[in-house]
Image (cartoon, helix red, strand yellow):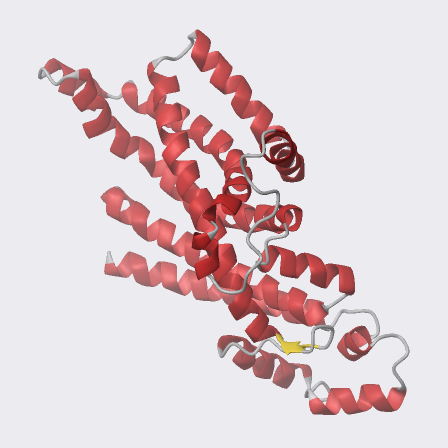
Length: 314
């Protein structure tokens, strides 16, 4: 297990390195250079030269890369001249909120999708199985912004059950104090995952039900409930654990749209506003943090997979 963990850590470091190189190249591929992109088209040559000197952009590219990489590793992602605030402080304010939104959406996805997938596998090819399959296809194909607008129209404007806007206060504590305002964003972000995870769970359970160990357990007199929840479930969860890591990029991408719709002040809304204002340091900072989170999430998923299925180390 230690050897496998070290190999995965080495792979994660390599992936992060490649991502930083790509982001660095993108930063220096901006039209007119980073200085022109940040200062604007009206900046004079003297202003651009001064900006390049102050930020080390007049150094060789190799020196610039390692200086920039050192800043990223220490939380220095540059400065947002549009918001007059360091990108690191902006990310520190917004990242915890997006983590809470994504964590609750992922938890809801697993809690709903796993039982649905198991039920569909046990009751396969029956009426409710077809209904749930059709609903999964609809939610899986529906864009996130469309689901969000439908949620607001039905549960906020028509029924008045939940606010149409997420909590706007600073900090994390107000989110839990006004958790009713978080219901629609969480459900909107979770619906797409529920549709996909339930289909994978259904297929995984169907594959395991026909395995030899299930027939052996039944031949020994084990009840259907014990076979399902004591033997089949653990093996069927293996693909779901893999999907948990792979779903992180989709969660962050969905959070961008969801936060924009519900005006939730997280990383997604920060990126959206930065794109509208051409605030490149903020955009690159969000990309770097998202890449780090994706790599870490996949690493955690692989380690959990190793704990559940020891055969992985082979």
